Amino acid sequence: MMNIRREIKAYIVREGLSMREVVERLSITHKWSRSLSNFSGKLQRGTLRYTEAEEVADVLGYDIVWVKRK
Image (cartoon, rainbow, N blue to C red; front, side, top):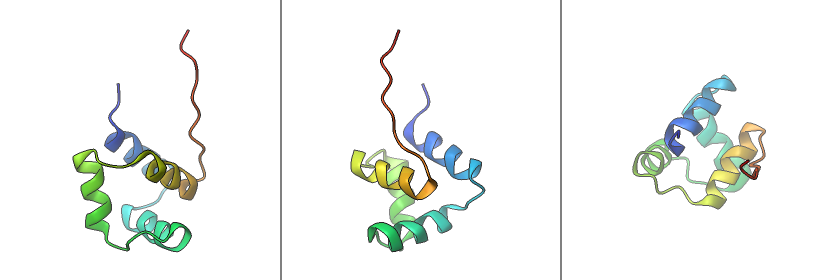
């Protein structure tokens, strides 16, 4: 199973963005700090809250969807 850090970074790359660009979008859209090190640290430590993950998905143009396992 992919960890949240790798998964979010994969979506960022897939969208052709840099971490800095994502942080900038988060600061404008969701009033996050403009600090890249804060965002990177949350990913590194695994301390990103679910609501924060939803906001990251939002600025990348995604929705988080839960799917029942088969």
